[in-house]
Image (tube, rainbow, N blue to C red; front, side, top):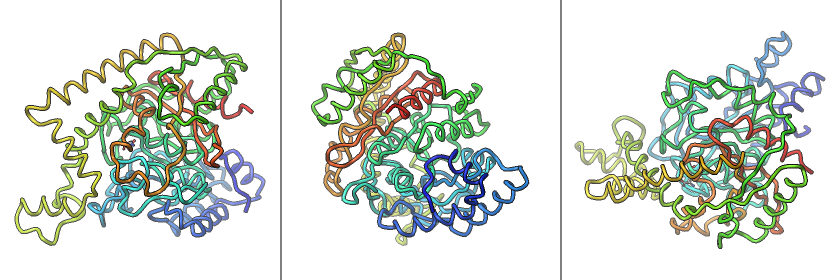
Length: 474
Ligand code: GLN
């Protein structure tokens, strides 16, 4: 069957009776079984997806189908779907079944999306290569020796390899944008508070957001329109009205786009990625946009600030996995201390343990002021600086990642090097602004890479509109 890369194309084919949701779903299931070496899916909901496809086909005949009819979607294995297993790619949640569905899942289903399976990721969304998954790394569809990125590696690879039309990931410090960059798809992290986190397994609650992976801005905008908006279950979710993102894409506004000089001067930046950004700047100017060079003297602080604050939040969020409430309990649990200690020792992977310990350390009496409190102050400083930048420009342009996908197994044993990978992406999460990675580059090594754009908080509509413009630039 022909491969479809937009919901619009799928819906045209459905209307023309070229395909049905059932035949479309069957073709995705076939591709999934042919591409198992990617290790993108942890579970495929084969029968259920076929049954939902049939229901959507019936609704289409009656004219009662929702806006996402024909959208076959995969979900990251940290988003609850009632009655389905959920593991956050961790052994500690072995055998756990969700008792309710995340708000985003309810909203997707209410518009007739077809959920095809749950996708591999780094354990508890901690990582940049998907190698921290208890179920193994995800291979990059462009070259299986390379990682798909992380933590939402399965979500990026599945869309890139056409195993589903779109997918959901979560982004705490770049986990949607970086794998999107590595796999050549669009990855969108909404403003903090735009999309409900209810039903998302928490890593760092003041950073986490759910967002879509797609091939284009139209599909991202429609998914955002369906998912965003207030939720009684999540008090951090904004009450602001949700604009009709999908209808605001065709503006031909000219914008002022700033780029941070320090990001292009970073010694870690691949030369071809740098040249690509400089070319994009020229292209944006040629299309009538203003481009501005900006100073951002705090670039060296973003990664340490991110890792202090997120590990602190993680140490608290992950305290609930104790061998009593959820999932794995050690066979060696004799009393309360041995239940906790042995279940956590056996259930958590190395990176998750490292972060829980780091977070516990930065929150401990005696170190709280030196680390946690100081990082909170830097968070405020970064917010103020970012707001002052947005007085001068509409968007900030940068690379998404310093380079293309890493080789599997190469950096796995060097956590500090991996933390530095997040240099361009964590900024948006620290200050709560929306950010996107757009798949505009192909490196001479054959691998894709993206550019990142960030916008002021709740300017998701403008960010999606400029994304659409850039994706359609030749
Ligand atoms: N790579 C980052 C980390 O390891 C981002 C993770 C994320 O966004 N969930 O924390």
